[in-house]
Image (cartoon, rainbow, N blue to C red; front, side, top):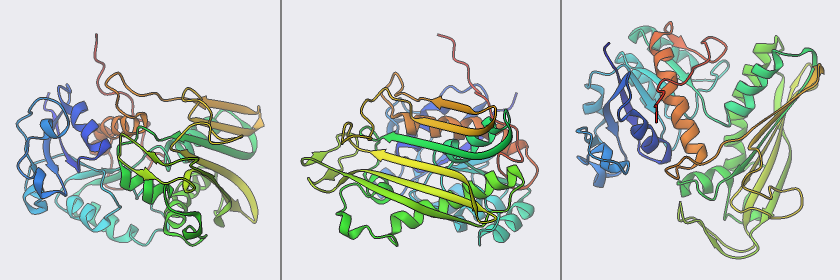
Length: 349
């Protein structure tokens, strides 16, 4: 059977793990790797990922990569770049993205990306853990076992001491940035609202509701008691600046709340009462108020190789989605359109 050829865009924590998962995969093979850093140009992808050489070298040249025969590109950049994603799609390369594009109904880039999909006979799908797993996938799945649903609440309690990207922890969580610089209009809040709006619209569409609005209805900080440096990322968090943040997002339909998502992220355990105390606490929790009332908890732990659980989870999701993305009808799709992916590589010990 012909293996699906996969391009990996960028070699951060998720990208490196994807490359490791593709090594020896029975149904997929690495076709190319895109990088930002000129120092990585021409370096073997396996060596960049901490494993043996794979015979595929990384490049900063997007044009060169677009010429590579491939079935799917996995976009895990520092930001959502629909213009670049559009070029892959028009070239006839399907795309799975770990950022942006989670559910594009109502988003300004939808028309251009849909047009690109039709032109290239390709599919775009996106996912992640939040937005993604806890903010739309798990709530929708669990709601399928309840009747007369009146509300959905979901929590993520992320412990990020081992996450490998200082940029994402600083820009995405506000760690180390003084509270007075983090106003309600701060970029970090806008970024989370952008993603949560897509998740909320997906849940609303799945439940047959009309989404009115998504708001940040609460935000709390936990401050570092002392100067901290996260070894995995190198991020410096000065004493007195946030080492923990907790947002509450509420989605409304017909003026009434129907979905609440609590997103807690900490760089250190035991920052105070009510904050995550132990590493072995569940990462995710969903409560469905209905008949019956359902509570579901889910945990993820670091792999045997020490890979951060969030990076490993997002990398596995991307790889496992590849066959479904390639097989899907052209267009911007979501979990409302496609069957849930399953593991694609069962590795006997």
